[in-house]
Image (cartoon, rainbow, N blue to C red; front, side, top):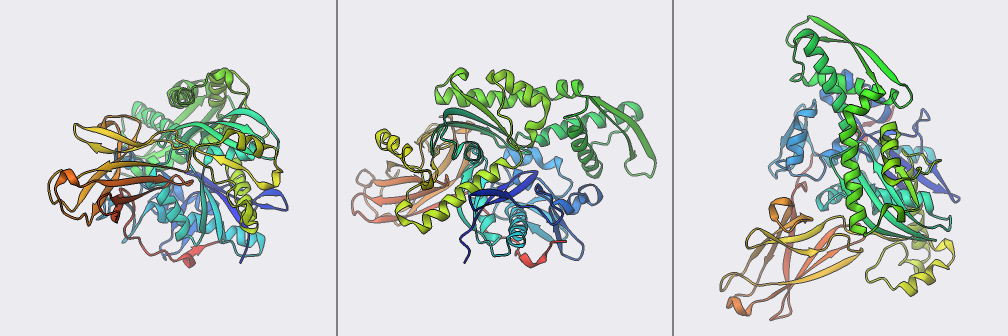
Length: 546
């Protein structure tokens, strides 16, 4: 069995896989030498699949059979506001399963989003095995810091479906901080500004040698580079309507072709002042061609997309407030994610934080590299049991003990002290959320509450579980239901159930319940909305590598 633990950045637009060999992090390429792998799966008519760079061209050629940005759907219930908002932006049909989870329909098959993620992960696993000449079975997978319980569980499940033992889910900004600071004996406060294809996160950390302590994190799971692309698509459609009085917005195939074009033009504007294209389309329902000359300057792009960047800066302000920090108290700014290549993003972050971003870091690869560094540390811990506590984070930090850790040898590996991105709680009378797990609590942690039935001889209690940072239920998202059963009957005033909520270092929630009268553990079932009950069978052998 291989001792290697790979690090994977499973991105909305692109994915990267890395591994540490002889102390050096290596980013693994595909057979053509490309190190960035689009998170795209194309389903061929014969049932086989193409994944990665060679699937990219099918987005425009066969958009209904080419799945992209599945990460924006993962771990969400079908009737969530976020999925309703996204429904019109994909050319492939998305339908509801019987358990209210989304399915992507290809012919007569219905694929859960985590199944698409599993195929991307299996492809990355295969690339690593070809490159290394040995099996790869273990991985650290990076997720957005703002991912909630359902999204984290779905990501972990995708890894398992791909044949990987997921050693740890690590937050993307924390992984980037590891790649930036581990081994450098740094003592500073750092802002990790992570703007990817479909998600945005900002994390403020304090680095003290091999200790990486998250001070606060904030994010938006539906803010990313895709939003810039969609803005350009709308501009192109407006030009067609203005010049030809034709509305193309209802044609999903046209929209997809324009999205591919928009992504090209967005990239061109990172280095050019002006980009232009002659675009030819058809009047819907006819074979009549119409064309426009579309031109866009960088200044126009900036004006049209400034509000998208502003949303990210509002999130940065939230993270600062949560940490109780001023911008001047930060030492460095690290930009992560392909969207940070946009000059407007660089300009506005430079102005907001009043400092130049750290140079020399590849924003597309840094998260996977950090994940592989942490994976290498976990592999060493398995080989040296006396170090098994390292890298797991802890509650009630003993500062004197931690200061001593900073003076230990670097080969003990990084110590990560991460936090909860959202508060967790249950609904109570009056539409108020009783907060059980506080936002920004250090992981792992556990909190206990006591509950009683509402009537005599009640043997079952159902509690809605919510995630969010407001006391008002309607401002938060229902994660699922906590069901307590097998409660011995009795007068309600005599029945008291102790319920303990535990969040581990992966950010995953578990619950246990105890009857205070008998001391017996009660059955506590936590059902998470958006968690897939049944999946389309995933046969990894149907992947095409060439």
